[in-house]
Amino acid sequence: MPQPPIESLSLEAVMGMINSALAEQRARVFVFFTEAHRKLSASIDQFKFAMSQADHCFAGDKQSGAMFVNQKYFLDSLAQLTKTTNSKLALLAGPEKASGPLARKLETTHQGFSGLIAIDLAQNYHTDEAITGQIIEAINRASPDIVLVASDLKNQEIWIANYRHRFNCSVVIGLH
Image (cartoon, rainbow, N blue to C red; front, side, top):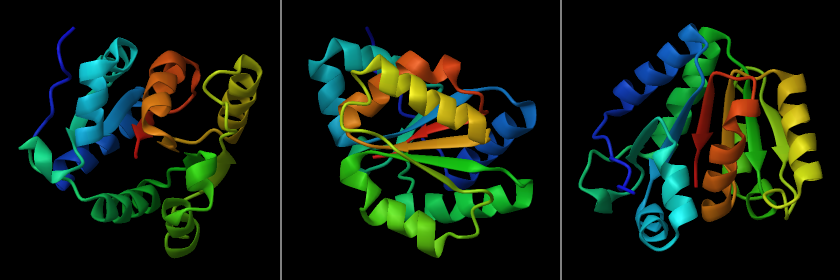
C-alpha cells in the first residue's frame, strides 16, 4: 500500500478546495499530514489504509518537504470561509482536546465561525459502535457543512475513514 501523497498546497489553494467541496456538496476528507502521520503510516497498516482514503493530505509540519500550512492561519481562514459562505462547522474533540487550546480557540476567539457546534468524543468513541452511532446522529442532526475532528491521531484518522460515508456534510477535516 503506497504512502499517501503529500500535496504541496498554499493555504489559499486549500481554502479554494474546501470552498469547491462546499459548493458542490461533495464529501471530501482533508488531513493535515505531520511527521507523526508518516511514522504511523509506516508501522500500522490500518492507519496507512485510512490515510489512503483521504481526498487530500497537506503538510501540517515543516519536516514533510511540502509547502507547510500553518494551523493557526488555517483556522483563521476557515473561520472567514464559514462566514462568507454561511457554512456551519462541527468540532468533534476528544477528551484530551475538549478543554485544550484548539477547542478554546474555536469557542472563544473564533466566535465568527458560522454555527459552531461542539461535540465531545467519548474516550472510546473509536471502539464503541453505540457511541459512534450517537456521535453520527448528533452530527447529522446538527447538519454542519464542515466537520473538524481533533482527537487522538491514530484513532481519529481510522475512525474518519471508517465512518465518513455516514456523515451528511461536504467536508471532513482531520486536525491533530
